[in-house]
Amino acid sequence: MRKTFAWIAAGLLGSGLAVGAWAAEPASLYGTHGVSPQAVLQGTLGSCYFHASIAALSKIAPEKLRSAISENPGGGYRVRFVDGPEEIVQAEDVAFARDHTFDRSEGTWVAVLMRAYAQRELRQSLVHAIDKSDLIPSYIKPIGLSLLNQSGQLLTGYDRAVRSVVQQDGVIDKALLKTKLAAQLSALGVPDSAAQMLGGFLDERGFFDSIALTVEQNGEVFGAYKSLGQGGVPVRVFEAFQGKGLSGLVADKKLTLEQLRQQSAGHIAMVAGSWATPSGDGYSTANWWVASHCYTILNFDDAAQTVTLRNPWGAKPDPDGVFTIPLATFLDAYEFYTYSQ
Image (cartoon, rainbow, N blue to C red; front, side):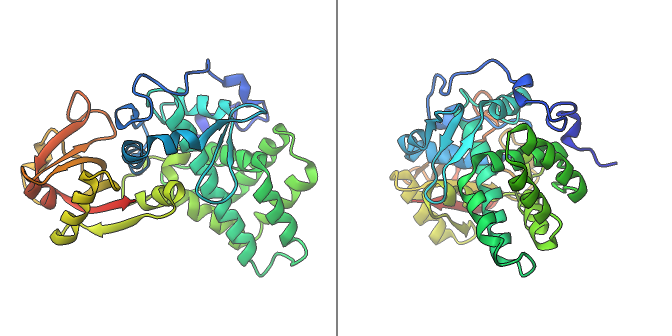
C-alpha cells in the first residue's frame, strides 16, 4: 500500500488550521560554518541532488547564496533567484522541514533555499501550463498569470497542499489536492475569487498534469523519498541559482579532466552522480560508496591525480562525509557530473 506524508501533517496542513500551530522555536539562519559545504547536511529525504548542489555552490559563491536570502517585511524570508519573482518562504514551513528532518544542515538557510526552490519549480510549471493551455479562455489567462507571478501566498498554499498529499513515489491525487489547496488558500487569507479560479484550473487536464510532472520530478523537496535518477537533477538547481547548468559523462575522460581542473581553480561548482550498480565488487563494501547518489566535488589534485568529494549526508565516510580517491577510481565509480560557472 502506498504511504503518503499526509500522516505527518494530519490535522495540521489539511485541516485549515494556521500552520503556526506546529511551528518550532526559531533557529538561527546560519550556524558555526556559515554558508559552506560543511554546513550542508541532507535529511531523511532523497534530496542528495539538491543538497550536494547547494554545497558545491556554497564553496565557490557563498556570498551569492547568502545575499539571495533576505528577511521578508511580513515575516519569514524572501529568496531571490537569477530570474523570475522572489519566493516568499514562511518561517512555519522552514520549521516543518526541520521538525521532520527534511534538512539537517547547520542553521536554517538550506531549508529556506529548499522551500523557495520547490515554490519556484511549482510557479514555473503553473505559469507554463496556463500559457500553453488551449482550454483556458484567453481572457482568463492574463488574470491567472498575473496572480501567479505576483502572489507569494498562492505558491505557499500550493507548496503546503502538495506536501500534504504527495505519495512516496512522488504521485499526487488531483481530487485530494484540490480539496487541500482550497483549505490552505483559505487559511492563508487568499481571496475566494483567486482561490476558486486557480482551484478550477486543476480540472483542466494539462494544468494538473504540469503540476503532477513537476512534483514527480522533484518529489524529494516535497516529501517523497526517491533516489538520484528517479527525481530531481542537479542541473535544475544550478540553473535556479546560477542561470546555467551543464552536465557531462564521466566516461569522456578528456572533458571530465578539463572540468575537474576548472573546479580546482575555483571557477565552477561541480557535483558527480554515482552509478546505480557498482562495476566492481569493492564498491558495495567501500565506506564512501552509495549507489545512485549525488556528491559534491571539493577538489581535484592534478599532480597526485586524486579527487576529493563530500557525501551530503555528512557521513559515510565518518566523521564528515569527506573522502579522497584516485582519479582512476572516480572515473570508474561515477556516471556523470554537473557544473556551473
